[in-house]
Image 1 (cartoon, rainbow, N blue to C red):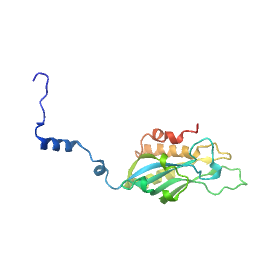
Image 2 (cartoon, rainbow, N blue to C red):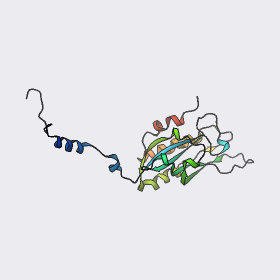
Image 3 (cartoon, one colour):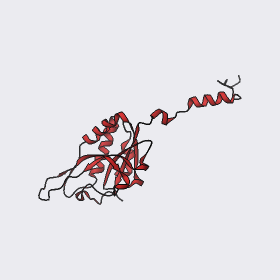
Image 4 (cartoon, rainbow, N blue to C red):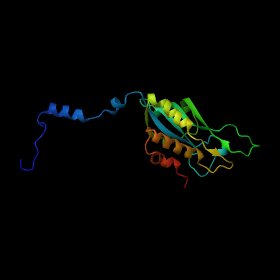
Length: 186
């Protein structure tokens, strides 16, 4: 054979070549199905509370937005998981505790302050794992905010959530994916 290998199929047989190539291709839409949801980190220029306004970060806050894969972020309709700040007692010197929130009726065009151009696609989750995703995000430790805030508390929370989701096999490399959102202003 003089340094050549025999072929598994004959290249002259076009039909056989097409069938062989089709067997190698993976259709991601069929593999993942229609009941998958994309997870985005959507930064905001508005903090959950004026107390959290900080000049040390570009974005003041960030939420996770879960949208149906077939519709995508373009529709702006989905589930928002994030943090909110309860009313602050001005007389109290105690730190403010942020609270996790779930907004199943999130509609991006209606909301103010979100920077959709900087949204980061973190991964996807199957429909049957959505309750687990919610449990992990809403159960993550929320930061305490002192007056004055040190800045970046919400973004640090987001990184902690990303690590918890990575541990559960939902996301991978949250530090890499969220790097540009977590960077302080220059």
